[in-house]
Amino acid sequence: MINLALDSSVLVKWFKAGEEFEREALRLREGILSSAVEVQTCELVLLEVCRGLVKAGYPVHKIDEAYLALKEMSEFGFLTLVPVSALKDKAKELLVKLNLYVADAMSLAVAVTGHLNLLTEDKHLFKQEVKDLFHEEGLKIIRLKDISSVL
Image 1 (cartoon, rainbow, N blue to C red):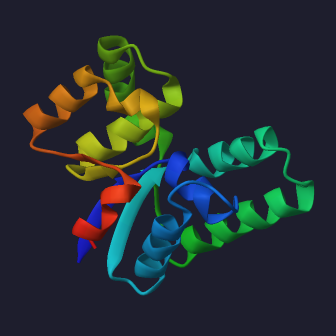
Image 2 (image 1 turned 120 degrees about the vertical axis):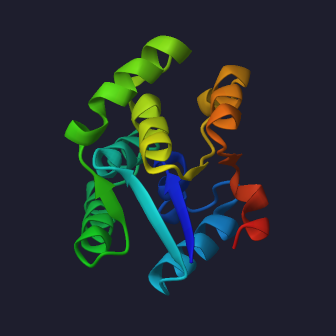
Image 3 (image 1 turned 60 degrees about the vertical axis):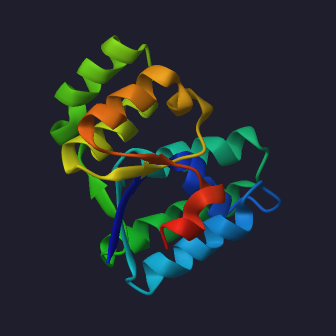
């Protein structure tokens, strides 16, 4: 069983056609739905995916479908949503230390507190300071292009 933390930059690729590494993202989704991969993410990720689709100009009904799909995946146990209340102290520490946005700090907090490698395409999380922190924690930040080495 493979266990990963992931963020909205990966999940949005499940719904937004034509994205770079879309094929790899969809392969990951298949792994999750077949229970070969377990993933954790911050509970706010559903809203982050919706925001990404809004910014991309997606129609409301498509955004609603994406939200419902992710919500159902969590309800059926395919996607573990970690409550903000369990992450806020670590996220605050990370956003101050690494000068991150709240959503990015939450994604890192899921990985660090769960001792999970993080799968992301978010450029803010490829800063050297973030990589150094993960190295210190014995964790890796993985890109979708490298997912085949993990799956």
